[in-house]
Image: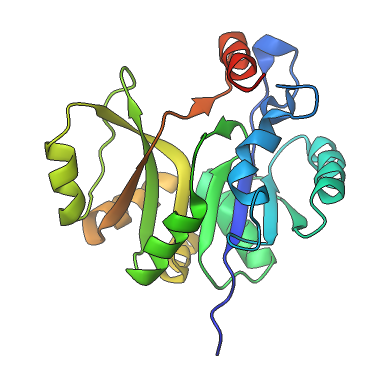
Length: 228
């Protein structure tokens, strides 16, 4: 039996209340790109090597998600964009609901629609995750002021962290195995999921360049400056 192609589940949530109340991921960054377009770039620039199935998981502003899904389908005809609506109690509830709805059985790439991670190489991340049979691969970024996330990393990564002086910030980019997804489906909250995984499993970590969450007008201006 051939291994199922990975599926990407993109969490679409959050209103930009300080920027007019529009969904954060739909804020324009360039003349042609909104935040979600740049967030999806690690997938859309080479879908044949990452995934050709993207699920947009939404708990609110359903019409906005459905409308922009049509735009994405027009831009990226080789990718199937599906939508999963739910009233999630937490991020992993929405993710588990999406995986259940579309019968996802392979590895899952989890990303946030309002988080841009420039330079993220999902092809390499997936290769490492699959070849080493990791339960979870998490992308972290070099950071100077966000503090250090509590991560239970592999021994090979511990040496890397101990030899560096930078803090790490855990992004929303996570690759989880079918086994880990089964655990997620049984959890009532994302906190319960991480409590289980960090105490019983090793989490492989990949260090990437600094990410950008678009939460404030300053964040939006920074995104426009970077990508103009």
